[in-house]
Image (cartoon, rainbow, N blue to C red; front, top):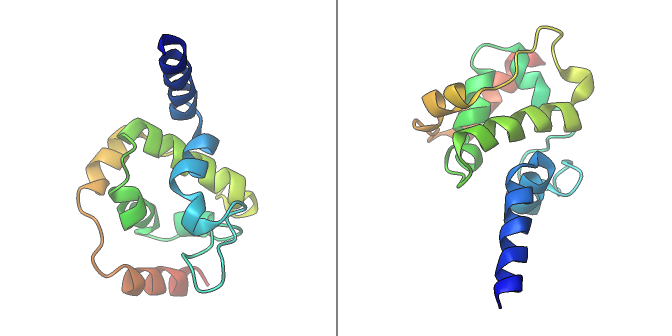
Length: 129
C-alpha cells in the first residue's frame, strides 16, 4: 500500500513538472493529441496558437480562455504549458520577439475569464489574417 502511494506521488510530481504531461492530462481531450482538434471541436493549436502573440490582446486571450483561466494548474505550470504549446504546435508562427509567459502574467489575467470567447477569438483572428 505504501509503495503504491509513493509511486502515485512520484508520477504526479513528474507530471506536474512536465508541460507535455499537463497537456495530455488537461488539454488533449478537447484539442487532440497533436493539437489539430477534431472537426467541430475546440479550436486547433497546430499552426495557429502562436499567431495570437502577434496581435494586441492575443496573449491575454490565451490566458483568459476558459480552459486556461479555469484550469486546476497553478500559475507557474500554466505559464509553462502556454510556452510549450506555442513552441510545440505553432513554432513557425512564434514571433522573433516572443517573451515567454510568466506565472505573474498568468495570475494577472486568468482571474478575468472571457465570457464571449467566440467574439473575441473572431476579432483576434481577423487581425492576424
